[in-house]
Image (tube, rainbow, N blue to C red; front, side, top):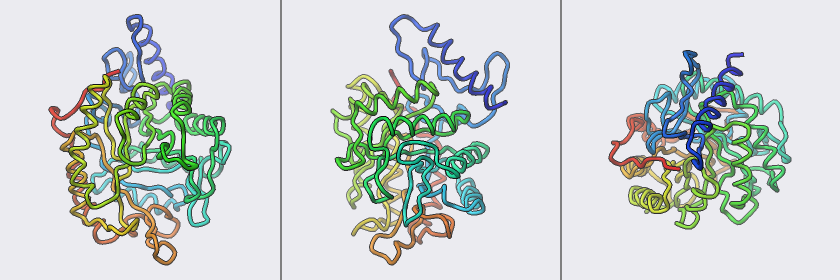
Amino acid sequence: MVHAMRWFVTVLCVFLARESAPAGTQLTGTQLTGTQLTGTQLTGTQLTGTQLTIRDGRFAIDGSPVFLVGMSYYGALGAPEAVIRSDLDQVERRGLRWIRVWATWSAFENDVSAVDGEGRAREPFLTRLRRLVEECDRRRIVVDVTLSRGNGVAGSPRLQGLEAHRRAVETIVSALKEHRNWYLDLSNERNIRDKRFTSFRDLEALRETVRSIDPLRLVTASHGGDIDRDDLAEYLKAVRVDFIAPHRPRDSASPAMTESKTREYIRWMREIGREVPVHYQEPFRRGYGEWEPRAEDYLTDVRGARAGGAAGWCLHNGETRGAPGGRPRRSFDLREKGLFDELDVEESKAVEKLGELSSPRSPGNAGKCGQ
C-alpha cells in the first residue's frame, strides 16, 4: 500500500507540474518547470525510499548531490541470497553508491534473465530482480538495470525487434516502478552493428513506453566507444535520454584521455542546447584483452572523469578471457563466490580508494541539465 501510494503521488507531481507549465514548455521526468522533483514530500505526506534524481548536471540521492561510484554486478540474479547480502555489505562498507545488473544475462550456460526472448516475465528471476532493487533501496544503493538485444556472447540474442523489446521495457518498468533508486539502460551498446543494434527510432519508441508507465524514471541508452557529435545530438534531442553513457575505449591510452573527453562532451552539449550528466557506466576492465589495467589506471580514469565534470563511474569487471573456464569470472557468474572474493589484487587496491571519490565535484565543473 505504501509503495502504491508513493507511485501515485509521484505521478500526481508530474501531472500538476505539467498543468502549471507555460504553453509550449516540454517537461521531462528529471526537471519540471525549473523545480527538481524528488518525491520526498507533497502536501505534508512524507514518502519513504531512496530517491535518485538529477540536479545541475549531477546525480542526487535523496536530494544530496553525489558522484556515483559503483561496480558491475551483471550476474546478480543468479547469486545466492547470502552472496548478495555479503556483497552489498561490502558495497556499503567501501562507500560505493551503485551496482549495474543485467535483466538479460546468460553466461556459462546459466540463463538468469528476468525476461525471455519475447520480453515476457521470466521467473524466478524477475522476482529476484525486484527483491534486489528493494534491498538496495533499503540500503540507499542505486541500481542500473540494463537490457540488451545481445550478440551471442552472453547467451542467444533476444528482444530481436521493437515489439519484443517494448514488451521487455513494459515488464521491467511495471515490476519495479514503486522504487525510485534505479534507472534503466534501454539497450546496451545499441550502436554496435551486430545483434545488439537498436536504432534511434526504436529508442524513441522505447523511451515513450517508459514515460507512459513511469514518467519520472531516469533512462539512458549506452553507447559502445566514444560518442561523436552527431550521435550525441540524437541522444539528446530525439531520444531525450536523461544522461549519456559512453563506454570508452579499452586501451592503455584511455585513462589519461577521460578528463578531456568529458569536457568535450559537455562543450558539445552546450552547443547543441541541452546538457545532461555524463555517466561512465562501463569503462575498461581486467581480463578483457592484452592490456591489463592496474589499480593506478582505474584511479586515473575515475579522477579524470570527476575532474572533467562527469556524474558517475564504474569499476567494470568480468570473466578472464583465455583462462580455463574464464576464471575468475567476477560479476559475470556469481553462483559460487561473491564479487569481492573474485577480485584480484589490482582491482582490490582500486576498490579501497573508490569510496573517497563519491562526494560531488565542485559546482564550477557541472553543467546544468536543460531541456
